[in-house]
Length: 242
Ligand SMILES: Nc1ncnc2c1ncn2[C@@H]1O[C@H](COP(=O)(O)OP(=O)(O)O)[C@@H](O)[C@H]1O
Ligand SMILES: [Mg+2]
Image (cartoon, rainbow, N blue to C red; front, top):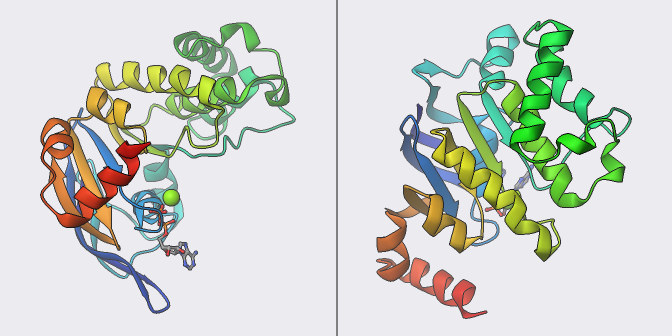
């Protein structure tokens, strides 16, 4: 579903993505972990073409990412992305936030888009907040709305970049639960997270990045119990110690 081949990118002198090769199959959930600054967000942004790459190829569902124009807009709509910050439209209701993309980009009929938006809000458990504005919701609720908004575009792949990092601790699980359900439903997902419980529970594969490179790739079970590289061992000892 997502194939990266020999992808390279620099920010000035910094080699931020080094010969990245990664294949995510349909229905697969890949969790990307690694120290801060290792290139995880840049990788997500490259998959969505928010960040140009210098060499290599990225294909989504067999199609190479176009450089720009309409084809790029269409492909981007196939890739849902949920960030750390929710980025909901503050002056629109929750329901409008979720139904807007389908009507504007997918040319859905307003009534159909609204009905579908309500279904999705139910799925993420915030249907009673439909007529409220984002600021009236908790962070966990807002992030669940952000997930619903992405799903409304019927993406083929969902990217999550540290979706729970900005949340108060008591709200993390409600978001991870929605993501776990989504994973079970067969969605193809790439998830950058420090939530090791989620990785163990939901990931088919863990990819460990360090200094712009994929250092290790394994099943969660193998990765957590038997990391191979010294960098992964070091990272896990720090993150599992607290
Ligand atoms: N727009 C940018 N310009 C210059 N350097 C950047 C930019 N975005 C990220 N970087 C640098 O690239 C490296 C990788 O960043 P990032 O992909 O955000 O890492 P991660 O998400 O793993 O923390 C970091 O050293 C960061 O400072
Ligand atoms: Mg990041």
